[in-house]
Picture: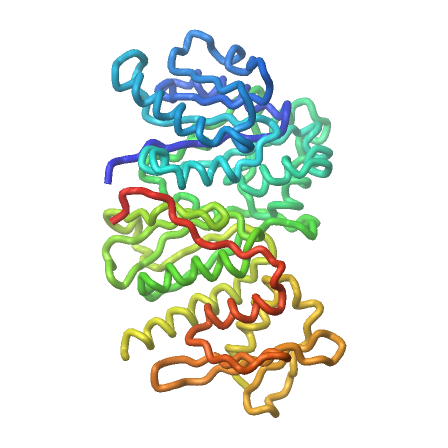
Length: 330
Length: 101
């Protein structure tokens, strides 16, 4: 299949520092070839003026919140970007950065990127980065569903403005950990970040697997906490097992299931693992790697959500596989 | 007692958010049936798994319905959930379009 452009979504509550992160990212050598889509909530967009008005490939959407009513606009905008780049009107680009509005729930945006036919063939979600203000973040996470949804969906949380906080961001980290005990957390002061935190290299489609081994403490965990559980199965699975398991996840976990990522060894195609990526019950068409990225050929699934019992999920997957195996022997 | 089936049912009740209001029969004195109580002693559903010539058979009895036999854990849980917590939102997998293979 054709290579798809990595799409990173930068989200975070109002005033959390998203635009500063994007602005500083674009100044880094080697990362200028990035198309930026800014989704501002309000009649007059100003964020794009704060970044660099000379960038011709910068596109501002200022007519509403993408997560509410503008899902078609995302496809239209990406299509337009691709067209003007192909015609030479703007420099070509090899990645897309989408900055959401501060009140956005990232879920429908991510689902649109997966489901919308043009987008699903053009982009792949590389990362969801959430900016959390060290000063206001704890209160915002406590008070606003939107902020909690953003933290819940993130691959990585960046604590911003920690230089202004007497506790150096500790309260914000604590607030984030209460909802996402296992999420990777970094800090960004004045937008200064490692660009790799926003875009993993092209070969890093399974880099999220390493998040499982990142150390984290054991803070107080909120009742509504979102957690990641990891499943590992050594033996290859039947392809239909994967389909049935995803369906069982969607049916039984419902709205508690936020994201699913995985690399799966398929019996029918043992040399080319399948990559699974879903947001709630919406899944990208299974992607196939040309080869295993490492010596580890086990199936590994990471599920993010609430009330996810790793033992039960593992048993469910195992039982489905046994039933499929039984059926294939008939 | 089929401990695997019991763990599957128990985990499903947890995923549906009703484990705390459900009680299991803890002994195997009903020929392998797993009873689900409503917390006040009323059995609302019973489940048993066994093997049939054409594969696994999941028997599900609901308090006011005839027993049904279902061919997989996925369908058994679907049937059970539809009666124990019909109001719970259940997602249906939707695959985006793409080139696939």
